Image (tube, rainbow, N blue to C red; front, side):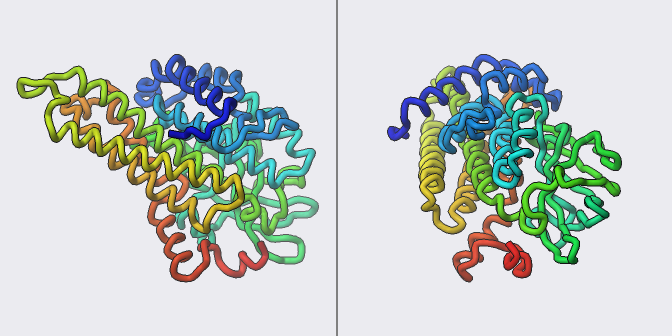
Length: 392
């Protein structure tokens, strides 16, 4: 499978597999229990160049393709889906958004810190009214002299303890035209408050929590792209991140499958080898087949994306099918562990919990189904209000 990989892609996958096995696997369960990722792991990740994997070489990155990013995400997720989820934000969503929207000066100033791991970024969009339902968003950036003022609040900010945040907000220019844009907020900015992070079911190693913006002053250097359309013109970054996110789900299911396969092979049950019990054998075969199907769909979509030939809403199909299937697989696999499966100390059920988080992060399955349905029934793969679409 994946016989189309070139030598560079195979080398990156092998490197990520070794890194995950040696550096992440031994502490993955502790990351989950403590709900904290050691800074030493972030430093080691940066030393390998993973934070700059998808960033252009001219800005100090590796300039790898999305297939390579997904291969790396999958391998990291086999050890810790929570850490892999954080990694996709740093590898793809934040740096690629800056690459697409930023001026040359902004790219030269912001990207090196991400690549080195010295200044991690977060991406903040969700509000009480939802993430995709931007018409209900209340966070706004409005003109104030030569700059702008940002007011509002956000929920569920991934990697909420990052030093800088890309904030999606409603915007208005000097002529009163309204839109949706992207601004950069630093934790040192006056008026910025980070509230206590949430105690979550899954992704416990990646801090998530609410943010508050109280009359924060923004100058031109803090605005990424067109203030009115920047929130939509970086869609390629969102789509690439969505596919890397799907790779995390594939790796999550594969990681638990590998552990369960070893468990089944070594355990006796009801007087015989567990692997000889027909229901167990069938469950393992079913899990293997579903993971293989998810992987095939993922990389078929990734290659279509890179060729500019991805069908409308295809990334949404990927998100719903892969994440939901991975969760179903993990639920079944945890059952094969019996009592050990529900004990947090074994590190087994964290895969199931992380898989569930994957079904909500980057848009719940329901919003992606709504987008798919809108494309199928109305030929419009978006739920963005029409007045904003015209401007974008």
